[in-house]
Length: 426
Image (cartoon, rainbow, N blue to C red; front, side, top):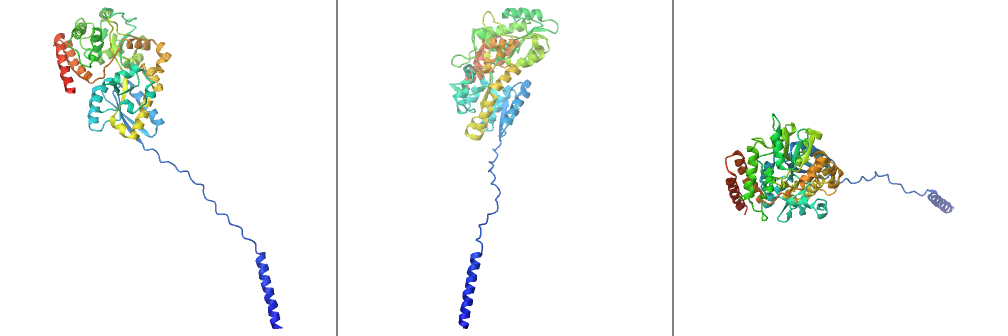
């Protein structure tokens, strides 16, 4: 009986255990706690690149250059541009010294003739190592030509011209003289009291080149060799000396002399370049007249033409980061938009084909006069021999104008000095 009772209790206990197990709710999977959304990976900020930029412009455009640089930096926050100004000759010497010490600025903006000595010293990069043909196709071929040495292009222009012209004050002389003989006559008539009829930079060969060209000469021959000991050079020297001896020009006058006289309304006519037009418009307003320098004995005053060119230190080519920064900077500084602003603010003629079609040029008597003068020009040689020509020319021109040397002796001395200089280049 006890066994039976125990068996019954055991069965009942087992059944209760089974029923209890069946009644237990099935556990549901738990949801893991929500994770915060993954944050996007922020790429590291690009490394800041600093470009050193040297230029030799006049002080009237300092603010404009800084404005352009500020706009470029705003659009390219990874690039910082540090501008340094030098006078023309100082920039050439300083850049050569710095480049040979491998400490040159990445970019310079200079006249075309710097391409000669810079390329000979192998301190600048050929343009085709930085820019493709599509980029170059936007420029006038004529604007590129003055920066070509030995078949290689060494600079990119942001304007075209850099040429001399006759500037006159309409309140003193209503129309430009048609010939240089007429200019001489008018200058003598107008030179009274504190008014000077005509002035220009007497002792600077760049101004002399147009006169030399009018007499049939040119500083370099077809083989880039200096040519001074000839009849054309002697006749040119005699002519400019006569302007001084006859009182057509002041006894002593350099660039600042002519510039100041004209801005103050005390010079009726001067010869100056396209870079000066902006400041003269500001000084004279609608009294400013612009025309080609009139022909001398029927021959055009053949001024030199070129522009300002961005040239790049050769070390940039081997640094991908700086190369990219330089390409972007030069592309911006030579763009159509920037050239249009040079045109509007400073009357600089563009090197860009499209900007040259702007009605602002054809409808503006100042720009139309500048373009007419440009048509008489001849591209300034960029060969290294041109530096020898300048250096030999200047002291002998100064000697003739001072009356310490005859034109014949000056021609002979200039040729000798230039030939000796060229020999050192070889």
